[in-house]
Image (cartoon, rainbow, N blue to C red; front, side, top):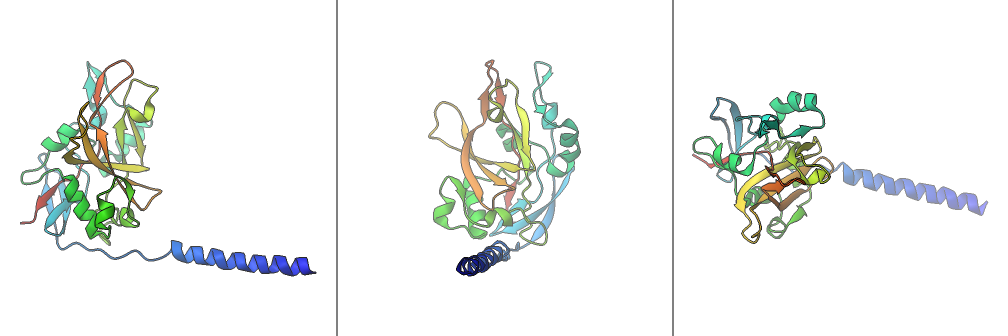
Length: 244
């Protein structure tokens, strides 16, 4: 009889703990809204919306002008291998193009530029990240990764899980792959990490489906395959401009 009472008490306490966890999981996100919105047209006539935070306008869609990343060729051979070609082609319109670091710098519409590492940190602080966290490397913050993915009903920034093109995820192969689409989104900054002397490395941001944080880190802008060929790495691009 005592054992039965013990298990009944244990079960009741377990239910109460589960209830606390559910309350924490469903807590409301802070509301962050832009100061202003508008539109911009790129060099090929594609129109994008933008949102303004602290006097800086951010494009709310990934750039999609230029040669599609999956059509880039090296010595007449298509460079990028696709796990699912049909999926990549179907999602190009909504997820935008992927660009090398040099292309990301060069393709900005007139008056716009690739955001610096400092621009990204300022945006993250507006979304609620502390200054000390914003300055660290790795995954930082708490809910900022969710806020930065919100559409027009929230922050409006709408970062996308658009994947990347890289050799590093497939170290056993000599070909770059388009990978991690709908799982992670990688975004160039214009800021070079001067501490690396063996090759050019730039700061980037990463968001993920399984996390509410935002990663700040550095990556090589080019990689060498197992057969010695140098390939560009391709990430997504957002542009900014000073408010007019």
